[in-house]
Amino acid sequence: MKAAPRKTGNPNRLMLLAGLLFLLPAFLAAGDWHIEELAHNGTGKFSSMKIDRDGNVHVVFVADDGGSYPVQYGFWDHNVKRWFLMTLASGGSFCSLALDSQQHPHISWVDWGTMSGAKLRYAHWTGSEWKIAPIPLAAETVAYYTSIALDAQDRPSISFYEYNGPRGTDFRVRLRVVRLNGQYWDVETIDGQNQSGKFNALAIDSQGHRHLAYANVNGETAGLRYAYSDGDSWKPEVVEGLPKSQSYEGYSTCLTVDHDGNPHISYSQYSEPFLIKYAVRKGGHWNIETVDQVAGVGYPDRNAIALDDAGQPYISYFDAGQGVLKLAHREAQKWIVETVDSAGAGFTSSLQIDRGVVWIGYADESGNGFKIARRPLKSSEHANSSATEGHSPAANQGKQ
Image (tube, rainbow, N blue to C red; front, side, top):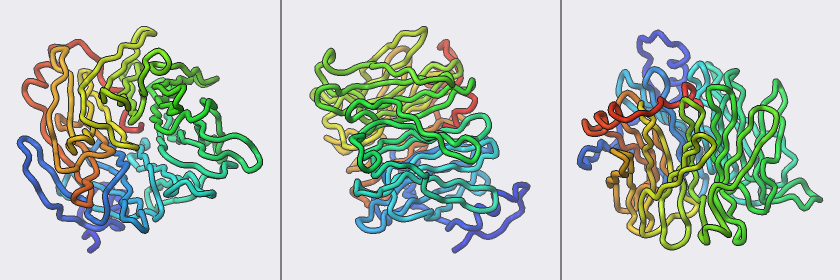
């Protein structure tokens, strides 16, 4: 049924809720974790989550139902403590979400599969309706991951993997970014080397600079890469990868930026030993740490990363070999790892920390659904944050 109108000081929220289906999720207990099954019409993959300044949770994911592949948007109203869900489109994949200055959602995704004609698509809530359209690109096929971020004027930038370039050209499998400039979309090639950008994550810092973490997955040049734009040009670099590392780095990439504009990246080593890694760039230098060794890395999985109020990283990831979702966080210069869910749950997770609560959205492959897990920060985490010198997340982190 549709959500019943209620008294509220925000008419835009009321209009948004009016188009959403009210859900009463199934509740599960897992230690300190409160787990809800938000949908069960297909494995909910490629989720992207943001929490707005009022404490409402926004999430988008694609239900892998083997047929229609709906792009689904969920909204958790912090006042009534309930979820609402709606379908935005069908035939979608690899979605990403950001919030603008009015706390309205903006969403990017690509068409399911890698067939000729697969497009990059963009949707946003205007305050009264959804606007949904393909982005006009000359590319024949756009596929795999997208990532959306908004600048201070609420103009979207979207990173994407151009699987096949314009017809009649040899351009393919390269990383590009499209940005809305007034009424027009401008497109840039960030890394044209073969197979750069299948995994990508975009963020815009408080100074308006764009940051992009991504993977090259070519057998001879595979690695984690990073590009930075101060507004004039992009400056790409290799963070870790072949031939120096002798391993496949940069898979499952995710990115966030702290208050000082420092990029924090979580990613996977996609060769034995299978590792979850963390890289941070400060003072012009990269520091790389191993977070955990897992039994297997899913493909095409994506980790998630968020910072607490002291700038300490939290990383959610899927151990595909054991079929479990894990969360790791820094505590007294050590990585503390816990299991959040199991039995095939945890693929392509999204992560946020807000008001002392950790939120994770993730696919439940065995249950054919999508779940949300949350728990309060523990006293040891609060103590570690207050005792550790760090920095708050970027003021516009919710817009990444």
